[in-house]
Image (cartoon, rainbow, N blue to C red):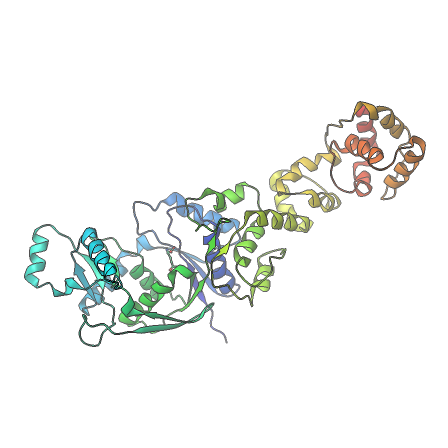
Length: 458
Ligand code: GLU
């Protein structure tokens, strides 16, 4: 039996989600479902920037996209667990207090770089005696806390190459050398947590089997695996890092950029499946095809190869995909949207109009063509022709052949052909210059309304 996977999507509620976040959410969702568990973890340890409003917005955005978390967890509810883990590390001598100011840290970084050395923290704080520490504390200095990476044999000042190797779901074998990095700060002077330790403690306590996230976390994963080990965790999750999305100019996405926020895309009338498909399929070896729903996306995406480098999310492509989704949307799928828009159209009418939709909401303008009011504007030079067309309007019942019979007869009687024959009729009957095939549309308009409109146009 294959093990059921438990995944988590872990945004911080400091803004609304953008397509880059959705790529991560969907990679997790498609990976775990239908059988696995999807946890939404709100990384809200930053009191100042995290808000309930944003947390609500994240759930709203996910729901709209068809992601309904099995569980919602908040890091702000779990400070006790982080405290306990920190104590465990500290007792093991793996978490130590440091008193350098940001300024001092920056200066020593610069010094090292000027000497062509990697800017790795020198662990000077480990040299402090108890008295020196007490003196610093007496001055009112508060420590930040670093995790002592196990990248040495006996002497922490003599590090040796220490590879952490993991088999990435998307990238294959990855190697992170713990000697190439500074001991990470796990806790700040003010007692707040950086993301590293809480994330590991949560993954452990929540039974996360797969950590799927953006490629910017590969180096973190080296540190986090070291932390799992330091905490004695046996079931370390499997990791997968997908490539990141950029905007169409190649710039990184951020929560501050309105143009790609899910909320904005929703307001702009895009279909959720167009948004999810494009956020998932961009930057993979799979074509961006038109898919009916998330199940179809899962199937299409199943054996996808994910590219290494960042990939551009292109809104032009979203427009094109959105149209294709609408043009193929079955009546049964459209129902909910039609109800929400307060529009009643028949199955036949939907099949005709959907091909003219750029956004779903355009249906509101099309529906009246069949049973409402349109403005049948025509040019003065077409008046006589429309009068004649009215006279020659075929008798009921109408079917798909009515239009060609009528226009065929009008062609002979008026001597008009092509655009001059068809356009005035289309404009008088629909109030528009473009639209669905008139042969299919005319019987839906029906003799009575057609008569009325032609007469009104005169
Ligand atoms: N809150 C972190 C982020 O948004 C989570 C990273 C992770 O998935 O572990 O970058």
